[in-house]
Structures are given as C-alpha cells and as structure tokens.
Image 1 (cartoon, rainbow, N blue to C red):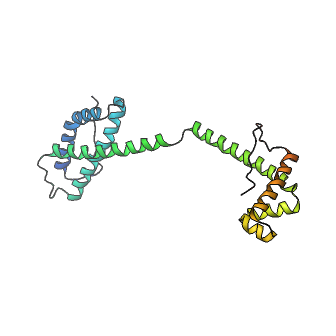
Image 2: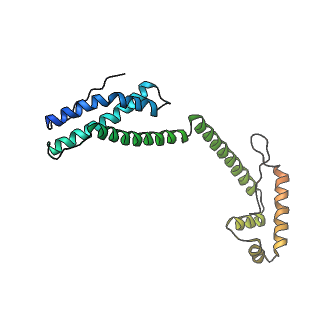
Image 3: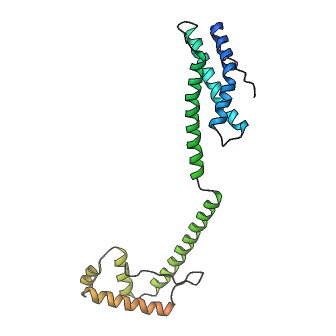
Length: 205
C-alpha cells in the first residue's frame, strides 16, 4: 500500500494538529481499502488518486477548523470515526458528481455523429436549393393568371377567397390552376434532384 503524507496548510494548536496527522496516517490503509472496494471499475492507481484527493480535502478542512478555533472548543471524542465519517460523506458526493459528468459525456454526440448530422444538413440544403431553383423556373413559365393565383396562395388566401376575387367558384379556380400547372410540368418535365428522384412541389398550398 502507498503511503500518505499530509502537510497542514496552516499553523494551529500543535497538539490538535499532531493528533490529526497521527490519526490520518493510521486511517490511510482503511481509506485505501474503501477506495478499491467502492471503485471496482477503475485501476488501483485511479481509485487511489481519486480517494487521495477527497481525503486530503477532508484533512485540510479539519486543519483549518482547528486553526480558527485556536485549540479552544475543539473536542472530538473519537477523531478516527469523525474523520472517516467525513471522508465517507465527501467520497460519496464526489462519486455522484463524477458519474453525472461521465453520463453527460456519454450523451454528447461523437465526432462521427456530428459528421453525419452535417452531411444530412448539407443534403437537405442542396435539396432545398434545387427545389427553389426549379420552383423559380416554373414560376417564370406561368401565364399572368396562373402566377396571380399562385402568389395569392403564397400569401395565405383560400381557394374560395381567390375564386370570389376572380368571379369563379372554388372548384373552377382549382381546376383551372391545376390544368395550367400540368402544362408547365409537361413543358419542363418532372423536377428531379441530382440523383434522378422526382421532387414533389406542392402547388396547391
């Protein structure tokens, strides 16, 4: 087992500090055993380093308390039980914090996932651009009446409202518009993406 040396960060009552160091050294094998038992997934060096950091934090905190009291009102019947209890509490709290950190890291996307996401986004951007270009080409080929109806639909007018403005019934507007779009599709051909797939443009929206 490795040795553990603790150097108090401050001057305090020499008797209490000496007692703290003696008890800390006596407890160190028990601290090591607890660290190995409670961290089976870690190597012995990792488990020991983790416990050492927690243990040193406990001892420094107690040493500072002794300094502030200057030896007065510092009475602990069982220093060994007190120190191990404080270590156990901090150790469990530190473990929970580490588990949360590891869980957060595990849920972060890997570099491969990020690359796939970027490629998917790029593909969607390309498809959107291709559809936008094809849409503009189709609009340029519309006659004035068809373009007016299409623009009204883009502004959110219903087929019934458009029909009222044009003096037509709703079915008449729909039929005439779809007939005009059919002629444009026949003239331009079905819009397709770079892979040859037909791109569906919803003209009736």
